[in-house]
Length: 212
Image 1 (cartoon, one colour):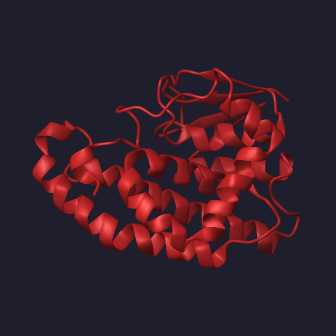
Image 2: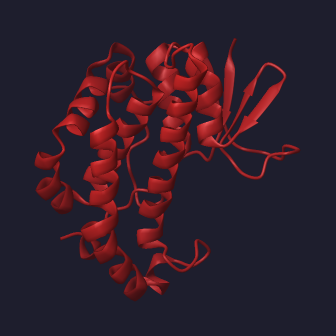
């Protein structure tokens, strides 16, 4: 099986959560720019043979057992899916910090609102998500752990000062991040040219005025 992942070139975005799972497993895949596809609202979407699967959490729910990143138990797989959906809620809130009014507007057109949103995110929402995943973290390793790695990486880029203050309180999450980074497939990926760098066009963006 050679998977085709359709997502916007030049940004990590939601597609990166899928790339991490594929890279960790050493799966064969190609990155493709998105085109028109019936039944798909927006990228990312994955083509696996005749299947076309959209939505990041849904794609990972499909790939998890096939890549050895999810257990066979249906109850456990559903629990992982629930966790991944919560990660995607968290990711949406990260995006809403710098685009609180509308995604169609430039950041500069909503800076005042973004500052207010960032203050609430740093003080309340970010610690709440960190506490939840710190308390629910556990073995065995799964695609959710790879997603948590990506969240920590992205938050360190977007909110370095805030994360520096908070990380010591969430040692299990940091341990998950470090464990993921040392996995052979992920280590190779991070040091390769395939890993797109964080930038000001993706979901995780660093605006110093939004971080304290």
